[in-house]
Length: 216
Image (cartoon, rainbow, N blue to C red):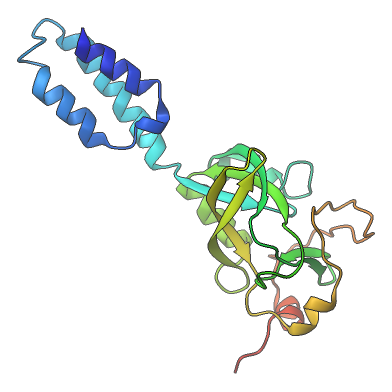
């Protein structure tokens, strides 16, 4: 029963289920030679492993959201709509480095400017998303034309540091740094700049002219 115990132990611990070859090795080395009477049980566990491994391989992206995609904010429905893919809330956190989080354009859109050391340790939420959800978030954020998705250190409430994708505005106009900085975005916050939903994507041509630095 050592084989079955090891497989069951692995199957209940997702953090250890990272290498399918380990499972293949266990089964191929022991299934016939050591446990000839347990073919059915091992085969069923093998199927379970395939299903769990497929799920993990398709949900490996961690994304930090700090604006309208957070819970109780206007665009959070994007994260919960199954047609967009899968997004699972992991934890609350904040950027390890300070960044300026501002509100701009006529739609009062929150933008995280890539200016490390300026502003606050921005608070937000970490989600684990699958490939489909990440692709849809890229479309929503107009990556890489407007926002740039970049890996960044996020500090959890227990001080654990986690690498996450974060959408930054990098080629921004310097005057945006004169706007008030936020630590924790809320559309209905004291700033009085309630988010206005647009029929277009976040970055229309007009918006981009207002916020993006012309490098030509």
